[in-house]
Image (cartoon, rainbow over all chains, first blue to last red; front, top):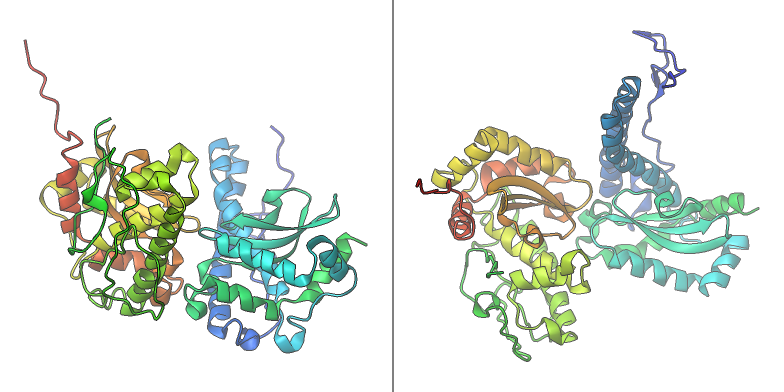
Length: 226
Length: 264
């Protein structure tokens, strides 16, 4: 069994906060806008809870699971290693997905909702017919999703094709295909809209397009598709 | 296999298909017009209901302050009602599924693990019926008599059971339910979690108590504080009376006593 090359530092208080025994620990990314900036589409109350409570909890539990994984790896405890995978997938996925989500959104006065142009706009028109068609498709998938999950606009970087995908719970997009890159995702967990839209998920989906940050989405697309 | 239908204890009297039909009796279309008593929504439904929206066995504000009127209105009047309506709409198109009791419909549409499109709605209707009846105003506290005995036998102590139940609720990933069920084969109680709308009936377990852990069940009252919601449920809402009635019925299907083996 290969020994881990990471050295164990005990009680090294001089270490930076993010490194304990060489293990990365993740922290909550800042929102690129104020909590209230996405009103009236998404209320400040929801944004605050979503960011400070839900996302933070995923990160806390992700770090905890990674810490436990580290210990299990050191002891070569296969049973624990395998058992921890679902917690890592769930909480790590939650961290990944929400980190993408905050960047997907922008206040209306900050470019939110402005339709994509250039290569992404063209790709959408070619592959879906029009932006409206894509919106219909995403909304339909989002509405049909049972339970908790995400709707994604995905780019298959090998086939160079766009597609609409859904994932359950906090599964990241890669679980649907290793070549899939998330261009944007819409959180359809109830916590993402309940306080404002109650059970009318369709209204949330209809309105969120007003704050989608197409500029960022285009950047991601162009990076994968130069 | 003998009838393994297990209906939750009947609550208020109003039209519902459940105890009416027995297995094998497949009638042609039998629309049941249902009177809506708590219709707070403005929508007029033109659907001839095949299944009715069962009202909880207490007024919608009776669970305050532990579960608000607003939540009940939204959860029962919005979500639960929606499941019933969508189910009925689906059944309009599907002759084969007429005439079942709700229990039977859940098992049939589960289709042994390959669920039909109607399953989610049927199961969620059943789940919510069961859930409302798993709570009562002035609930919580401890079970008594047979239920307590069985819990102590199968979990060691009530405290241990409570811990397991709460832990299950808090470690559920995504949307789902937590249940106290009586397992037929093993003849013992167990705490289980199910995802989305899955209902332990499909595994032939007998549900005794359930807790809805979908976010819509607690978000308006507790936001993301799941722990508080679960503890409030255990301390103030759970209906051990309902559990007792269900256990009593369950004993018709499961022999919980030691087998009496005659000595030659």
